Every structure is written in C-alpha cells, then in structure tokens.
Amino acid sequence: MANSCEDCASTTCAQLHSYVDECKLSDGNPCQECVQMAKLDSQISQVQSQLAQLAQKRRALKTKMNQRHEPFIHRLPLELSSQIFVHYVHQVYSTFDPKEASRSSHAKDWSPALFLSSICSTWRKIAFATPEIWRFIFIPLLGYDPDVDLKIRLLNDCISHTGQYTLFIGVFQFQLEPNPLFSRLEEKLDTLVPLFEAIEAVACRSERLALWGLPALAMHYIIPDDTPNLREVQIVEAFRYYDDWDRAVWWDRGSISLAGPLLTNLEFGSNASSLLDCSDIEWNTLTTVTMSAITVTEGFDILRQAPCLTSCSFVFRSGYDSNPVNPPIIHSSLENLEMHSDPRVDFLEIFANSVTLPSLQELSLQTWTLPNMEPLFERSQCQIRTLTLILEQVIPEDSVLKLLNILPSVKHFTLETSNARKPVITNQFFESLRDPRFASSGASAKPPLPNLSSLSYTANMDFPWPAFVEIFPPYNDVAHAAGRRPLSKVSLKLKLPKGAIGDHGVVARLRQIQQSKIELVVTDLDGKGLF
Image (cartoon, rainbow, N blue to C red; front, side, top):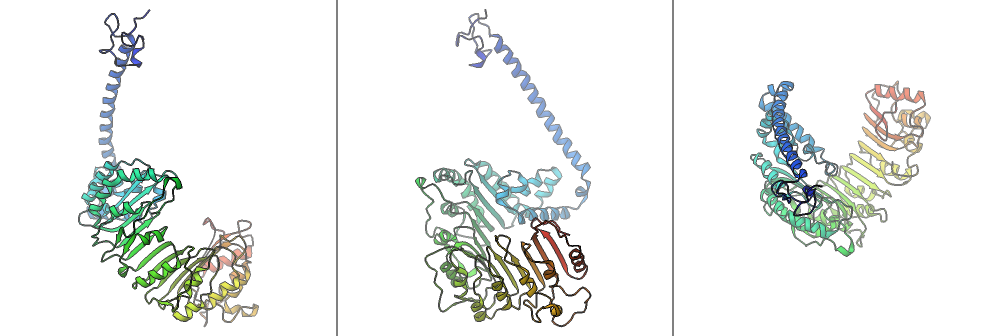
C-alpha cells in the first residue's frame, strides 16, 4: 500500500498542494504523482522555450516572405506608398459603421493605421512615415470591463505619429444588453475617467468628434472648452433608457459646450431634445445641422439661432407645441432641407406654413401623409432642383402629382414607396409623365417635371410596363425636339410579382432605351438586374 502524505493523508497529493520539495511523506520521499508532475512541468517548460524560438524564426521568415512576395510596394517611392496608405485609411473612415464594427474586434475596423503597421517591417516604416493615417482614432468601449490602460497607451501611440495634423476622434460605448442597468454603466464610466481625461488632453486638436452611447457627464469630460480646430460634432444614442427601479441618466443643463470658430457641422443622432437642453451651442457658425426626435418648436428655434445654415435635417416627434408660427420665419441661406414626421401629427404641414425659404433647392420628405406645401413655395419663390419623397403608407397619386405640378424646376426626382402595404403608384402616375410626343395616345402636351433629368423609383411593381416606357421619347425619334424632357438617367428598384420581366417586347424596348443616351437600370429590391 502506498504511503500517505503527512499533510493531506492522500497518495494523490499533487492535486491538493505543491509537490516534490513540499510533499512530505512518512518516509521523507515525494510521492509518485509529484515526481511525474515535476517531469511534466520540465517538459512543458522546454516546449514553451522551443515554441518561443519557433515563433521568433517565423516572424523573421515572414518578413523575408513579404519582401519577396510583395516586391511592388517595396519598389515604390515612399511618397507613393504613403499615398496608397492614405487612400486606404480614408476609404475605411468614409465607410466606417460603428455598430457593424462593434461585432468585430479586428484592428482594420477600429484602427486601420495600426493594422497597416502590423503587416511587416516595411509596411511599418511606411506607416510611421505617413502621419496623416494616424489622425483617425476610433476607441471602442465594448462590454463592462474595457482595458483602459491599454486604450490610453494606444491613444498616445497614435498621437505620437500624427505630427501636426488635426484629429478625427470617435468614442463608441456599446452595451451588451439592449436595456442595461444604469448602475452597471455608471461603474463602467467611473473606470473610464482616466481615458476621458487622456482624450480631453488632445481633443483641442480635434477636427471631428464622434461620441456614441455616452451620458452628458462623460461628454463633458471629453469635449474641451478650447476647440480652435473643431469643425464637426456627432453625438449618437446619448440618452439610453434603463429599468425604472435602477434610475435613469440625468442630464445637467448646460454641461456640454459646443463651440469653436470653425464649427460648422452638428449632428444629434437621437433624443436631440435632451441634448439641446444640456448643451451650450454656438449657432452662428453652423452651416449643417442634423437633429433627430425634436419638436417643431425646437426646429423653429434652430432656424432663428443659426442664420448661416445651408443644410438641415429634422426628425420631428410628438410634442405639446404644435402651432404654426405667424408671421413665418424667414431663413435666407437654407438650400437643403430634409424632414421626417411623426405619423400621428402632420408636423410637416405645420413647419411648411411657418417658414419662408427663398434659397431652398433640395427638399426631402419622409412622411405618412403628404402635406400641402404650396404655401411654402408661393411665399419662398424658390427653385427646387432635387426632390425626394419617401412615402410610408398609401398616399393618393393625385397628391403626388399635385406636388410635382407646382414644382416645374425639379431636375432630380426620387420616389420610394416600398414600405407601403398597398399600391401607391399605379399606371396613372407614369401615364401623366409620358413624353409629349405620345399625344396621339393621350399624353399631355404639358406633363409635370418638364426639366427632369434623373428619376429614381423604388416600390412594388404596381403599374403596367407600357405606361412606364412612354416616359421616354419614341425609339425612332432622335431629334432634340422643342419641349423634350432632358431625361438622361433612370433607376428602378422593383418587387415584381413573378421576380422577372416576362414580356419579351418590354425587354426589347428597355434594351433599346439603354442603347440610347439614357442610362437605365432596372433591378429588384436587392439590386439584382431584371433583364
């Protein structure tokens, strides 16, 4: 029978405490299990040492492979290689989707500069010699226990390579649950204070700040008072909803300062009303404003306070203040207006009856009801060049045509009704747009949109093809007759009942149109070509 351990009275003492030197059996020798464990540990140590040596050899070999297999970039002048890197990083930045990137922790999503510098020693030298690529700094705060020290080191490392360039900084805080407890978020934010202070120390060099999922106190830490280079601020999902028993985020009025001599673009991506209450905004320099979930009155206030606005986008929500303003507010510089209204109240019509916009050129409406916009156009005497209608439910075709008839200056028209459950646009719509040279078959001599050059239509297929193809000139008429509509680009995204165009005659006519000077694209809702 094997001797038992004096400490634990077990012959398998290696599972319970240290072995060899510490294992004291009654005869003074280590037990068999402890001896075997010591041998295994010795073998593991040898293998780990061999693995480290192999990994070092692999890195050296990988560097030689990169030099041999990628001679193109190694032979390029540094200036040209740097421009390639700059183009790549700008492409990543322009298509960056924080929510999509939050599903990945890959460096090429969050830090393309770090990704490029990690490929090989040559690419690292190019990256370090290209300060422009390091100015885009995105900081993900995923989960409840982000590695703050590591993020501060990476932030400072990126800053050290930027030279004198201004910075594009984004801080993106995402929760694991759709309705997280505020107490857990509060604990997380407490641990993030050193990171926020590190960001604030360099934020005076920021040209753009993007802040996602942060309450006012956190944003107050990040946004400095002195922002001489700041041109754009984006704040998204700043106010989150939490369980009632766990209390909500409280907003401190006036705690966020958004100002600077160069600040021109401001976006509040959600719960803008709360952000407006807790922000001190310098409106005089702003030229582009995007506001989600604001009241109509808040929209009026923005127009009054921001005299230099050229573009604004408003998503209106229900509120207690929904009365028109009289006399109407005159805003002389606004050129581009996008509006999305709550389905319960026709805020768009209230807004249209309360403003005069003489410089308006681009108008986009996403709505459940098409408001009467004629008073706005009569007062403003503006020339609308681009019109976009996104209709969320059934709206009479006559209402759409009435709007088009009072806007003969429109050159670019986009119509989307794919969310509507019932047909919105039928043959009546396209028959009204028929080319005047089809007058013998009933076309109007003065159809709407006489200056139309591009048409984009997304919807179910609720019209016959003959009505559509007659918006184009007859295929054998190549003369630029007086009054001909200058239509040069048409895009259709359709949901067909059978998933394809079955009429060969229609297909032939569409191909004839494509062979003319008109760019015609017909696809299904997923972008697949239908002929």
